[in-house]
Image 1 (cartoon, one colour):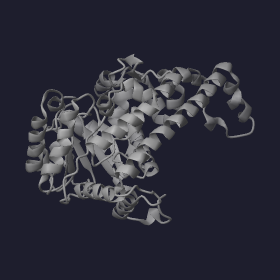
Image 2 (image 1 turned 180 degrees about the vertical axis):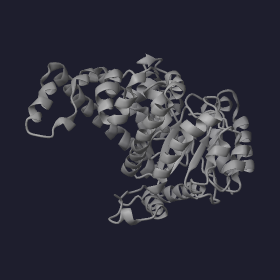
Image 3 (image 1 turned 90 degrees about the vertical axis):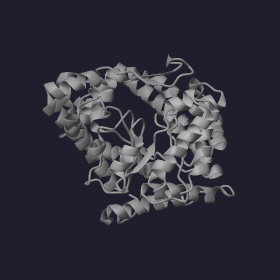
Image 4 (image 1 turned 120 degrees about the vertical axis):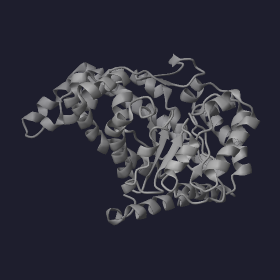
Length: 446
């Protein structure tokens, strides 16, 4: 809770309270000049979100492993060696001077993942080349006949079925019973029996060790990101994270192909499961953004792009549940930052929804036609992104500059726009990336 009367505040009052805390950073001691830079950057981001004309257009790219490539260290290095992580992320922010921080948090801890035997992803040096980013290893981790288990008790489903399937260390958790059995004295010893099984006890030891590894990691990334903020005046941009309920099901539970079959074979189960996942995702977004004192909640959209499903299917299985998550976040004064990977040209008329309050959401587009996006969302939502991966990889600095200038001239001059890349930025020539920032500063005064 941010204030004693938080529940009595309107969504707009909550929005202002969260942004005041994010922008002012009370108790933080900034280096000389960094506080002024922080306030300027956070203000132009807030202005863009609220569809105003900022003093200049913010440049806030979606950064993946690019700092590692830029610093000449491997992707594996930054997931295992926190000194090299700090070196790379410090160099990126110092050299590029972005208007938002590329949080080192997203690199994760290879040590922790490896200790737990995590199988949902392959990562640098552990399934992928040491110089390539991590990759999701999609499988059918939730079976077609398990929807009722998920719907009736999602926490127990996660603990006793899903997690044992994606973590080798948690395989013994299949033997755990529900704590909700403890309703009278005689049930206490019976519920504790699984914790006496050697395999379960060994699993708990691994969990404690993983906790220690995670503490080592969070202290390192916290120090790295904190130093970036106080010495260079660069604000955090992705405060929290959650997902569209359809993507929660499709990415890491059922898998893409099984879920697409489910919407034909058992559509009612899919819809019921997503109703359960809506409040879970709202709570995750609110909790993470509040903890990190940053009001933007990152929502990567993986299976809603053009071509994944028809417009009618999108209207039924994707947008209503995503909108419910968005509205839940907005109700708590937060800003959903929707990363629309791929093309969203066929979705623009749907996402321009009058039930979503104007100036309270951000759409970060990849390959969507930005002129169509502006026409659809003008006066409704801040639009961002769109510099294509191909221009960073195969183009030259002048190509990046020209593309950025065109975006600024055609999309950004009326406000409500943030310049950035389309897909997540990993490997690319540093001079091309730098050209994006320089173009923003050169042409972005509104």
